[in-house]
Image 1 (tube, helix red, strand yellow):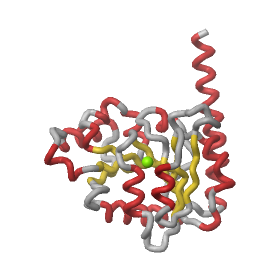
Image 2 (cartoon, helix red, strand yellow):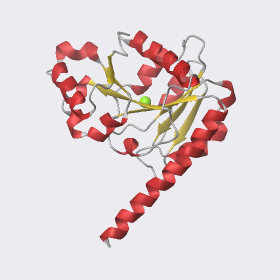
Image 3 (cartoon, helix red, strand yellow):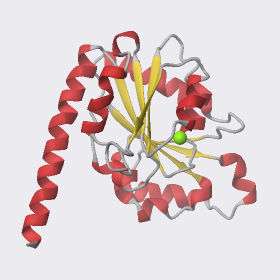
Length: 228
Ligand code: MG
């Protein structure tokens, strides 16, 4: 009985990876670089996108906005005159707490892939499940805000290990918190040694220039075949 359960999970992940490769082929055909942006709810994914996507040195972005329900974040980003597509996991996908390759695939016909250079997939806010499902992205980026506590890399290692860049957000709040930044970075290096990290504040704009430059450079690296 137990074996059967394990087998089913493995099969589901195999199926997900097959669909993720199909998504990847479609992104490649349109020469689109893709980011899977993940974090807990409220860490600042949307705010950090608002800070940079309106001006990316000629790189043309679009966003696929993943939420269980509603379109509040999509509306915020659409007000920047970006192409934004909402993907809700409820009711069509059972209210799942993450996006998987099949959900992203269902949204591809609604994405203007031939008119953009960069697709940002803002995943559902959750530190566990999104890390388990590839969706066809080039890179995975996560946001960890200092209000969440410095122990999070140790408690959710898969998420911190799965990403190529960690944005440490809300650093403007550090003077008001007991958060020990050195301890957080030590824990981060314990689970993902040397992973690229940036200290940012979506509220004050500190550090967001580096985040913008990283996105522009990512698209250039992907075009040169230097990503993945
Ligand atoms: Mg959001």
